[in-house]
Image (cartoon, rainbow, N blue to C red; front, side, top):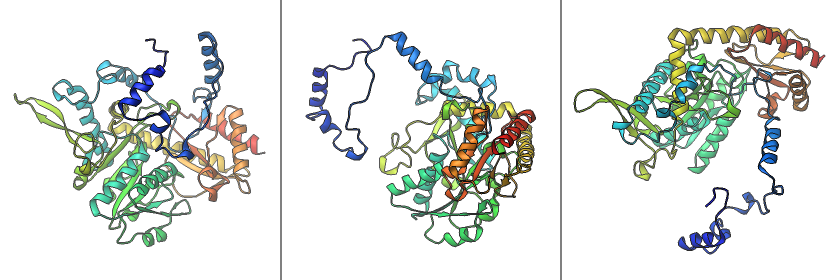
Length: 448
């Protein structure tokens, strides 16, 4: 049968009959009507292959990549540099094409990569154990909530409004499934409101969540906020851990984060990987899988999958994760990037980001009509405000800058109504002084 030919009516009837269902409509009857599309998909009339190809090229041309514009857009995904070495290694067949390493005797390369990756994340976060990656930061943070619920049998979460909006949304979605309450603590002068934070945490709280630096780019006093009895979870920017105190040295029990900046290109928002590290007491409740080091029958060094907590591998009632795939290939990019950068390199990178961020914030806030949203220290991202502007005005400013070839950042009003006059500006190691001055000049012309 041609790969372009769908199943026939007879094929469909045979399959439905085999599972005891009378129609396709009955098969999907459990899906709520509100989320179903009750109309045919609007497809154009049949076209030849050349016409389809031309149409797809036209659609693709609507995209604007960071190679086409100077990007100061961040908000969780960044235009960081990915050295050619990473793609070369990722495209090797032993990494690119193999399935989950169920057979350690033929999967030593993949298992060693996982082990080395876990070691790198543990060293970066100053926490003793790490898993072999998850999908991305929001799912890692939500998984940390479930771990906390299992650990202390409580069902209340306190989360700072400085945590990424997508991560907070993911936590609320999963918490609803197992009946946990999510309480949000607001911000004061760009950081978590300390008084409200400690007031919100009580004996029913399973975990408290914060982010370093927070979504506004501001550095939080993590050691102070972590001085609470419940499990503390911190979402970290890995590129800043070379200059900021690691979570494990600040009283944090679980550190999660987005690994996109570690050697993974933007690629239209993914895929990337999420990292997850914790203290030893949480080892057996961590999501996903953990690779370990051992010796074989001849005493030679070897690697195995030591712990697997997903329901595919153990009894469902004991599983702590239903994620059936980690982002192992993307995590490979992460560990190669960290090895390429080196211990001193991660420090130098953090220092570079801090210097460029400070320079850019000073230059932008020197413009008439631009003010800092908060005066506190930042590491790689910061927010400015246009006093008197609303979200529509900020969106118009951003659109005008993009038309001039510069993406100035992320309008904060999309996720923070209280900051509808705000713009989040991100710096990466790829932004040069010339590009920063171009941003300042472009923005000055637009708001004049």
